[in-house]
Image 1: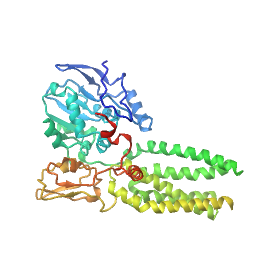
Image 2: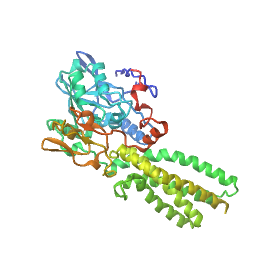
Image 3: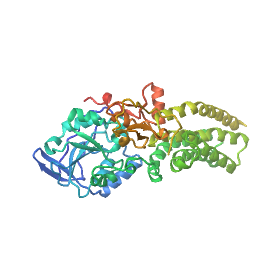
Image 4: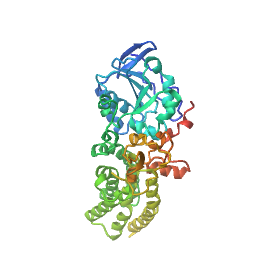
Length: 354
Length: 98
């Protein structure tokens, strides 16, 4: 098994980790330009388990070394596919290439997926040009067409690549699962292959990371709430439950319910998509706990803005919200949310002493 | 799914459009269509301002205020007075020495 060179990028935030164990490489292909690692088109349980961990936020920068790889037995005329070096992206692509002969040019996107890397300027015109120069691609392939994933297009300017390198950029389908059909179909994709949907399952896989990140804060709150209520001599388990359960519910509304039910919640604004079910939750939990008027209004003022705030941050995980739109939401709702929060704290403090 | 009404900033300058259709190829939300050999915006609310059309338009006929539609990034930008960005690796020019 051949060790791969890491890219020369010395990024200050995190150095691409040297992958000494690369079980996805089966062997090396001998070419006039030297040995090119050949990748497997089958995923093993190690790949799947790694992917599962990444979904839960344990491996945010889960990467493969950038560079040139071979799939099957590519000749100099075979197709060149360009992709990101996020391991999940790499896996999704290679498992679709069974029985194909292709060159795989993996860019250094710092372990970030195609779409986000294109938005951040990592999957970029410059990076495509850089890998064309760094790798022996021009020595092993005479073919001058690069197939890029469509979602790389915000970061890559096809005509610039052409001007500077002579390579023609062709945008493939949005999803790797359509790549074989795209190649078979004369490199043409019907509109359905060119459109991003955001179906239930796609939203569902995003929930674990959202939830894990917010539960950390909830845990800190839980400890603090416990300490404060015991210090003030109101510390019973029941009291702690009434302090923490409503908050936990409001967070779950913002990070689980909103993503899951996104298209069915009223209004287009994400803040309102969180605020309204937040009000419902606050009312329900107050009624259930038999809260007095102060507690009830405190819950109504505080809990829904938690749901609304986390619903608003979910805009960052969706493939259809615009910067101008999110800006508008923030300008529109920042003040009402702040007012609701301050009033809520005042009411809750008053309630504490009544 | 559609986001807020009438806020997206994408515009096509018809004078410069050659009708090559590349914007239709790269747009992940089918925002454009061809009308009399000229691309036009026909579904504005579907636009997420990703900037793919502008980046790939060979004649520079498309204008859009491209960026990330991410509240966290925009708030960060407001707080630090920088363009909206999602984290440390968003500015490769600064964080990468090569």
